[in-house]
Image (cartoon, rainbow, N blue to C red; front, side):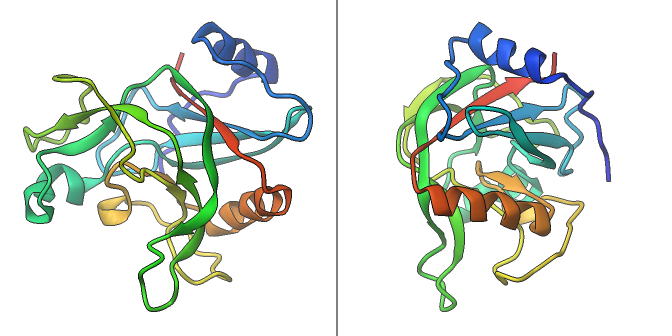
Amino acid sequence: MAFNVRPYTDTQLLERVEYIGGKIPNIGKYLIIGVQSQEDAFNTFDDKFYVFDGHKFKQVSTGTTNSGKTALKFFDDYGLNGAAVWKTNEFYEDLYSRGYHKLSRPDGGMRALRQRKPIKYYRDSDKDNVVEESGTLIEGIIYANMHGVDYNPYSTITKDFINGWSFGCQVWNRMSDYRQMMNAIWTRNKPVDFALIKEF
């Protein structure tokens, strides 16, 4: 497991969100900050997520803000014209609401944060091992949800490699951490802000 994102103080993170044009929510509303590793190791959960409740940071965990190997190498098998790559250093107010990821599955999918507003993203179609923010910038709803790596609601698994878990979704790779975050946000039942920043 790579832990490539350097540590930050609470103040540094909040100031960075404001620097990219974001606003800090009031108490009672959640802001999740995804910090994308500068190293950006291929197909590896090497990014971090920080959960802020409008008063203080409640949690930090690992995951990915990038598409994995399956999306980057085999996107055309799924009728796509490239792997979705989020534009970094962007803030989205009320981006997510509670819901389910892959609701059509026989098990009903997993509790997740569902994309409810457009995001800015690119399509990476060169099939190399590098996630690139290049080409045409697109805006839209592509159901780039925030979810975990196991449909078992009681799972405590941790995964090291992204593979097919992200085609543009924000994915937590430690299920015990993911469940802690989802339990808090599910109970609050308010839209969630999201900021995606590059390691700085």
